[in-house]
Image (tube, rainbow over all chains, first blue to last red; front, side, top):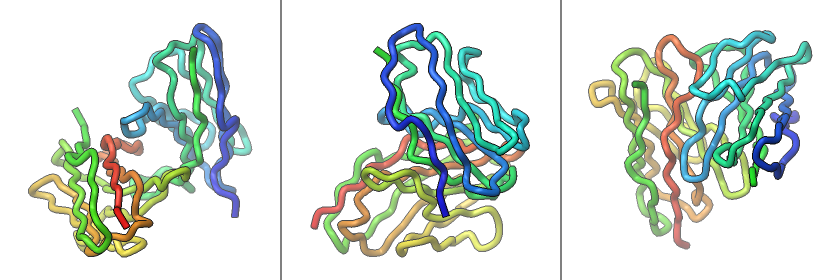
Length: 114
Length: 113
């Protein structure tokens, strides 16, 4: 079975630009979460979507937004990019939205902002 | 504030040595606890998790972890490491009333052959 897939794998942008990152969950999974992993730190929670509704949001500015589509895939959008947005962006999916469920991570999109 | 701390940032061991990686969390309520591993060039994978029952949890590849509620700890152990265990290990906690992981900063383990 295919795991969580993310596109693109790498991306280079300049300050002020906008970026869209994409995630396809494992087939049948209805929950998608986004995390930002800065070099040398653990992943930080950005958003969680379940059944196409936002169910949780981390401490990120309004420049970050996301959505989930009817097929449960998801997009993460970041506007007005800053140098500090350079990071690995991880998507994770789970079947439902339950605290004891395993979240399955994709390979990530590595974003570099120049 | 809810937080997770991993005290060992870098660990170097020889093959066959025993491993214990510390993980502590800040909150005293109900928690769900996870250890993830990231091998070089690969994505995060679940090693083991605890949400109820026996506080000693066994995971894949010979890893185990013990939940000690009184110490807010969930330490990862392996009796005898192998070169292939070289990776970064992350402790993650889901605190009561939430569904998001709070991750520790990770521990980079290098096993010398």
